[in-house]
Length: 281
Image (cartoon, rainbow, N blue to C red):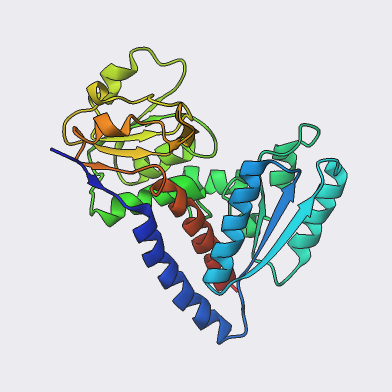
Protein backbone atom coordinates (compact mmCIF):
# COMPACT_ATOMS: atom_id res chain seq x y z
CA UNK A 1 0.00 0.00 0.00
CA UNK A 2 1.20 3.49 -0.83
CA UNK A 3 -0.29 6.26 1.29
CA UNK A 4 -2.54 8.92 -0.17
CA UNK A 5 -1.14 12.42 0.16
CA UNK A 6 -3.03 15.02 2.15
CA UNK A 7 -2.22 17.99 -0.04
CA UNK A 8 -1.91 21.09 2.14
CA UNK A 9 -1.57 23.38 -0.87
CA UNK A 10 -4.83 22.19 -2.44
CA UNK A 11 -6.76 22.31 0.84
CA UNK A 12 -5.34 25.77 1.56
CA UNK A 13 -6.52 27.06 -1.80
CA UNK A 14 -10.02 25.78 -1.09
CA UNK A 15 -10.16 27.28 2.41
CA UNK A 16 -8.64 30.58 1.33
CA UNK A 17 -11.29 30.90 -1.40
CA UNK A 18 -13.93 30.50 1.32
CA UNK A 19 -12.14 33.10 3.44
CA UNK A 20 -12.06 35.47 0.46
CA UNK A 21 -15.83 35.17 0.00
CA UNK A 22 -16.42 35.92 3.69
CA UNK A 23 -14.01 38.87 3.53
CA UNK A 24 -16.03 40.27 0.62
CA UNK A 25 -19.21 39.96 2.70
CA UNK A 26 -17.57 41.91 5.54
CA UNK A 27 -16.32 44.58 3.15
CA UNK A 28 -19.93 45.09 2.07
CA UNK A 29 -20.49 46.13 5.70
CA UNK A 30 -17.46 48.46 5.56
CA UNK A 31 -15.31 46.09 7.62
CA UNK A 32 -11.94 45.00 6.20
CA UNK A 33 -10.24 42.35 8.36
CA UNK A 34 -6.80 43.60 9.33
CA UNK A 35 -3.72 41.70 10.47
CA UNK A 36 -0.65 43.35 11.97
CA UNK A 37 2.60 41.37 11.75
CA UNK A 38 5.51 42.54 13.86
CA UNK A 39 9.03 41.34 13.03
CA UNK A 40 11.97 42.16 15.29
CA UNK A 41 15.47 41.45 13.98
CA UNK A 42 16.64 39.89 10.72
CA UNK A 43 16.13 36.13 11.16
CA UNK A 44 16.03 34.86 7.52
CA UNK A 45 13.43 32.14 8.21
CA UNK A 46 11.20 34.63 10.03
CA UNK A 47 11.45 37.03 7.10
CA UNK A 48 10.16 34.30 4.75
CA UNK A 49 7.30 33.36 7.10
CA UNK A 50 6.28 36.99 7.53
CA UNK A 51 6.35 37.64 3.79
CA UNK A 52 4.09 34.61 3.19
CA UNK A 53 1.64 35.74 5.87
CA UNK A 54 1.37 39.24 4.42
CA UNK A 55 0.90 37.82 0.91
CA UNK A 56 -1.87 35.48 2.11
CA UNK A 57 -3.61 38.45 3.70
CA UNK A 58 -3.50 40.45 0.50
CA UNK A 59 -4.58 37.46 -1.62
CA UNK A 60 -7.74 36.99 0.46
CA UNK A 61 -8.60 40.70 0.36
CA UNK A 62 -7.57 41.47 3.92
CA UNK A 63 -5.68 44.52 5.13
CA UNK A 64 -2.17 43.83 6.41
CA UNK A 65 0.34 45.95 8.29
CA UNK A 66 3.95 44.79 8.49
CA UNK A 67 6.15 46.39 11.12
CA UNK A 68 9.85 45.56 10.92
CA UNK A 69 12.14 46.60 13.74
CA UNK A 70 15.88 46.17 14.35
CA UNK A 71 17.06 43.53 16.81
CA UNK A 72 18.10 46.38 19.11
CA UNK A 73 14.44 47.30 19.78
CA UNK A 74 13.88 47.27 23.54
CA UNK A 75 11.26 45.14 25.26
CA UNK A 76 9.50 48.29 26.50
CA UNK A 77 9.34 49.70 22.94
CA UNK A 78 7.90 46.45 21.60
CA UNK A 79 5.29 46.32 24.37
CA UNK A 80 4.33 49.90 23.52
CA UNK A 81 3.85 48.94 19.86
CA UNK A 82 1.64 45.99 20.87
CA UNK A 83 -0.49 48.29 23.04
CA UNK A 84 -0.89 50.72 20.15
CA UNK A 85 -2.06 47.88 17.89
CA UNK A 86 -4.46 46.70 20.60
CA UNK A 87 -6.10 50.15 20.40
CA UNK A 88 -6.18 50.26 16.57
CA UNK A 89 -9.74 49.52 15.44
CA UNK A 90 -8.59 48.63 11.90
CA UNK A 91 -6.50 45.73 13.26
CA UNK A 92 -8.33 42.51 14.18
CA UNK A 93 -5.33 40.25 14.59
CA UNK A 94 -1.84 40.84 16.01
CA UNK A 95 1.05 38.48 15.36
CA UNK A 96 4.51 39.01 16.83
CA UNK A 97 6.84 36.72 14.89
CA UNK A 98 8.88 34.34 17.05
CA UNK A 99 11.68 33.89 17.95
CA UNK A 100 12.37 37.29 19.46
CA UNK A 101 15.87 38.58 20.34
CA UNK A 102 17.19 37.16 23.62
CA UNK A 103 16.75 40.39 25.58
CA UNK A 104 12.97 40.36 25.03
CA UNK A 105 10.69 38.13 27.12
CA UNK A 106 8.51 36.49 24.47
CA UNK A 107 5.87 35.35 26.96
CA UNK A 108 5.50 38.89 28.31
CA UNK A 109 4.96 40.17 24.76
CA UNK A 110 2.40 37.45 23.96
CA UNK A 111 0.48 38.23 27.16
CA UNK A 112 0.42 41.93 26.21
CA UNK A 113 -1.64 41.15 23.09
CA UNK A 114 -5.39 41.70 23.50
CA UNK A 115 -6.83 38.13 23.73
CA UNK A 116 -9.49 39.22 21.23
CA UNK A 117 -6.71 39.85 18.69
CA UNK A 118 -4.54 36.83 19.58
CA UNK A 119 -4.90 35.15 16.18
CA UNK A 120 -1.77 33.04 16.80
CA UNK A 121 -3.61 31.40 19.71
CA UNK A 122 -0.60 31.66 22.05
CA UNK A 123 -2.09 33.88 24.78
CA UNK A 124 -2.78 32.19 28.10
CA UNK A 125 -6.49 33.07 27.64
CA UNK A 126 -6.52 31.21 24.31
CA UNK A 127 -4.73 28.23 25.88
CA UNK A 128 -7.25 28.22 28.72
CA UNK A 129 -10.18 28.36 26.30
CA UNK A 130 -8.82 25.36 24.40
CA UNK A 131 -8.15 23.49 27.64
CA UNK A 132 -11.70 24.01 28.89
CA UNK A 133 -13.40 23.53 25.52
CA UNK A 134 -14.86 27.02 25.16
CA UNK A 135 -14.62 29.08 21.95
CA UNK A 136 -11.33 30.88 21.37
CA UNK A 137 -8.46 31.17 18.93
CA UNK A 138 -6.75 27.83 18.27
CA UNK A 139 -3.01 27.79 17.49
CA UNK A 140 -2.72 27.73 13.71
CA UNK A 141 -0.52 24.68 13.11
CA UNK A 142 -2.51 22.10 15.11
CA UNK A 143 -5.72 23.75 13.88
CA UNK A 144 -4.48 23.14 10.33
CA UNK A 145 -3.77 19.50 11.21
CA UNK A 146 -7.35 19.08 12.41
CA UNK A 147 -8.65 20.55 9.14
CA UNK A 148 -6.49 18.04 7.23
CA UNK A 149 -8.02 15.13 9.16
CA UNK A 150 -11.46 16.61 8.53
CA UNK A 151 -10.70 16.87 4.80
CA UNK A 152 -10.23 13.10 4.51
CA UNK A 153 -13.39 12.44 6.55
CA UNK A 154 -11.43 10.88 9.38
CA UNK A 155 -13.50 10.10 12.49
CA UNK A 156 -11.24 10.36 15.55
CA UNK A 157 -13.74 8.91 18.02
CA UNK A 158 -12.14 6.00 19.84
CA UNK A 159 -8.95 6.20 17.79
CA UNK A 160 -5.51 6.22 19.41
CA UNK A 161 -3.54 9.32 18.51
CA UNK A 162 0.15 9.71 19.35
CA UNK A 163 1.62 13.21 19.37
CA UNK A 164 5.42 13.36 19.28
CA UNK A 165 6.37 16.70 20.82
CA UNK A 166 5.04 18.76 23.72
CA UNK A 167 5.58 22.38 22.71
CA UNK A 168 3.03 25.05 23.62
CA UNK A 169 2.79 25.91 19.92
CA UNK A 170 2.01 22.46 18.49
CA UNK A 171 2.28 19.40 20.76
CA UNK A 172 0.12 20.37 23.74
CA UNK A 173 -2.68 22.14 21.80
CA UNK A 174 -2.67 19.31 19.23
CA UNK A 175 -3.30 16.79 22.00
CA UNK A 176 -6.19 18.86 23.37
CA UNK A 177 -7.82 19.23 19.94
CA UNK A 178 -7.60 15.49 19.33
CA UNK A 179 -9.05 14.89 22.79
CA UNK A 180 -12.00 17.17 21.97
CA UNK A 181 -12.78 14.85 19.06
CA UNK A 182 -12.87 11.84 21.43
CA UNK A 183 -9.50 10.36 20.47
CA UNK A 184 -7.41 8.61 23.10
CA UNK A 185 -4.21 10.65 23.16
CA UNK A 186 -0.63 9.81 24.10
CA UNK A 187 1.96 12.60 24.20
CA UNK A 188 5.55 11.50 23.60
CA UNK A 189 8.69 13.58 24.10
CA UNK A 190 12.42 13.41 24.79
CA UNK A 191 11.81 11.62 28.09
CA UNK A 192 9.59 8.93 26.56
CA UNK A 193 10.93 5.40 26.78
CA UNK A 194 10.43 3.06 23.83
CA UNK A 195 8.74 5.50 21.47
CA UNK A 196 8.34 2.78 18.86
CA UNK A 197 6.13 0.64 21.13
CA UNK A 198 3.73 3.57 21.47
CA UNK A 199 3.70 4.69 17.82
CA UNK A 200 2.99 1.12 16.69
CA UNK A 201 -0.31 1.31 18.61
CA UNK A 202 -1.32 4.59 16.97
CA UNK A 203 -4.10 5.12 14.43
CA UNK A 204 -2.93 8.72 14.00
CA UNK A 205 0.61 10.04 14.51
CA UNK A 206 1.53 13.71 14.62
CA UNK A 207 5.31 14.28 14.48
CA UNK A 208 6.26 17.72 15.77
CA UNK A 209 9.74 17.83 17.26
CA UNK A 210 11.93 19.38 14.57
CA UNK A 211 14.18 16.36 14.22
CA UNK A 212 14.75 14.39 11.00
CA UNK A 213 13.61 10.77 10.79
CA UNK A 214 12.12 10.74 14.28
CA UNK A 215 9.47 8.47 12.75
CA UNK A 216 10.50 5.61 10.44
CA UNK A 217 8.50 2.94 8.64
CA UNK A 218 9.12 0.25 11.27
CA UNK A 219 7.46 2.52 13.87
CA UNK A 220 4.15 2.84 12.01
CA UNK A 221 1.16 0.50 12.13
CA UNK A 222 -0.11 -0.37 8.63
CA UNK A 223 -2.92 1.98 7.67
CA UNK A 224 -2.09 4.71 10.19
CA UNK A 225 -2.53 8.40 9.31
CA UNK A 226 0.70 10.39 9.63
CA UNK A 227 0.88 14.18 9.92
CA UNK A 228 4.38 15.63 9.63
CA UNK A 229 4.73 19.05 11.27
CA UNK A 230 8.55 19.11 11.16
CA UNK A 231 10.58 21.53 9.07
CA UNK A 232 14.21 20.46 8.63
CA UNK A 233 16.93 20.22 5.99
CA UNK A 234 18.41 16.96 4.74
CA UNK A 235 22.10 16.41 3.95
CA UNK A 236 21.62 17.95 0.52
CA UNK A 237 20.00 21.04 2.04
CA UNK A 238 16.55 20.06 0.80
CA UNK A 239 13.49 20.77 2.93
CA UNK A 240 12.20 17.74 4.82
CA UNK A 241 10.08 16.93 7.85
CA UNK A 242 10.34 14.80 10.96
CA UNK A 243 9.11 11.69 9.16
CA UNK A 244 11.10 9.38 6.87
CA UNK A 245 8.63 10.11 4.08
CA UNK A 246 9.83 7.55 1.52
CA UNK A 247 9.66 4.69 4.01
CA UNK A 248 6.53 5.68 5.92
CA UNK A 249 4.41 6.34 2.81
CA UNK A 250 4.62 2.61 2.01
CA UNK A 251 2.98 1.75 5.37
CA UNK A 252 0.58 4.59 6.18
CA UNK A 253 -2.87 5.11 4.64
CA UNK A 254 -2.51 8.90 4.52
CA UNK A 255 0.53 11.13 4.93
CA UNK A 256 1.36 14.83 4.67
CA UNK A 257 4.36 15.83 2.53
CA UNK A 258 7.05 18.36 3.42
CA UNK A 259 6.95 20.86 1.84
CA UNK A 260 3.33 21.31 0.75
CA UNK A 261 1.64 19.68 3.73
CA UNK A 262 1.04 21.27 7.11
CA UNK A 263 3.03 24.45 6.31
CA UNK A 264 0.51 26.13 3.99
CA UNK A 265 -2.30 25.18 6.40
CA UNK A 266 -0.67 27.09 9.26
CA UNK A 267 -0.91 30.35 7.33
CA UNK A 268 -4.42 29.52 6.12
CA UNK A 269 -5.68 29.03 9.67
CA UNK A 270 -4.11 32.36 10.60
CA UNK A 271 -6.32 33.91 7.91
CA UNK A 272 -9.35 32.06 9.31
CA UNK A 273 -8.64 33.31 12.85
CA UNK A 274 -8.18 36.90 11.66
CA UNK A 275 -11.41 36.73 9.65
CA UNK A 276 -13.33 35.32 12.61
CA UNK A 277 -11.97 38.09 14.84
CA UNK A 278 -13.34 40.68 12.39
CA UNK A 279 -16.67 38.84 12.07
CA UNK A 280 -17.27 39.26 15.81
CA UNK A 281 -17.72 43.02 15.33
